Length: 251
Image (cartoon, rainbow, N blue to C red; front, side):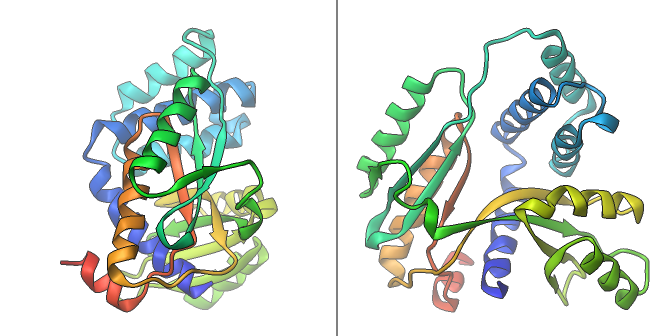
């Protein structure tokens, strides 16, 4: 799991840069809309999924007015219905790629996703082709809390933590839980008065694929192109982040 956490932190640093773009706000607005519609409440106190969306909105420094407009629009039922299809495929070097989307037009979305795979040297596969290669996990990133580290660790384990990793430089804590324990960890953090920097449901690769730097960069170009599509919410893959590749990405 440590390798996954290493990749999660790189993804998180990238997300900080992406947060400067309006696109990240668009994705969060979709999260809020779906959370209100499916959670049946515009009150985050009674809607855990909405609480998660709002926490991520705050982490991306999304303006309060934007958030309130999104909640109001969803509560009123205005706007097009949103669907959440997923797509699976392979990138260069046989890397497995899983794409989660939120869209009001599935025909447009699958056409765009297929075109990106083809253009970037990958291929879209049938449903179930790569899903089994990933395990669903909840990833919480916390700022260093003002409490005893050992006491905190025991509390997190009680909340379902499978893995706890501390960044020695920043003090940031990455907590991994099973998909089924996501809500339990949310409640545990709320009881401790800890607001996560980010909280996401991710698909963690069971095994990773190690490639040479040039092929790996082609995979990442495919992933980035998918992430730039307005209908795409998250992209997961099983490319191994080697020290050599990390050094190349840091240039």
